Structure formats: C-alpha cells, structure tokens
Image 1: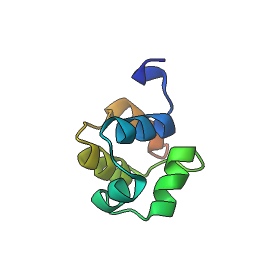
Image 2: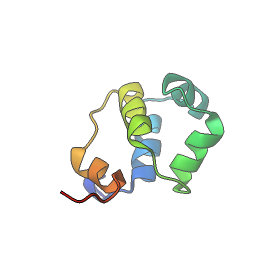
Image 3: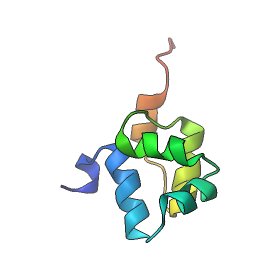
Length: 77
C-alpha cells in the first residue's frame, strides 16, 4: 500500500516508526499528550490543522494540502 492510499492514522504511525521515534518522543515533539497521539494513530480521531502541522514538523515532512481540505468545515463562497 503506497502512502497516498494509507489512512492518516497509518501514515502517522508509519512515519514515526520509520524515524525510530517512540510515541512519547513524537507526542513531546509535536506538543501533544501521548493519549491524543494514540487516538490519532488508532484512527479514533483526526488531527486538527494545527496538530497536522505540528506532527509534520516533528516528523520532518510536509503537510498534504489536499488532505487538509478534508479537515476544513464547509463554507459558502
């Protein structure tokens, strides 16, 4: 399964493992509680835009703008 086909939860976990980071280390680097990171990695919740940027920074990757659009509320133009 390519990264584009992975869920956000799977991507977070896969990137963390690739970088040999513990959940505690990633949570600290992204300024999140460990329990919140566990919810994100299990798919129980999706990251806010701020959390997505914090995770991306901590993992050394860029945020996918197309995925961010899915997190935004619908708005009328």
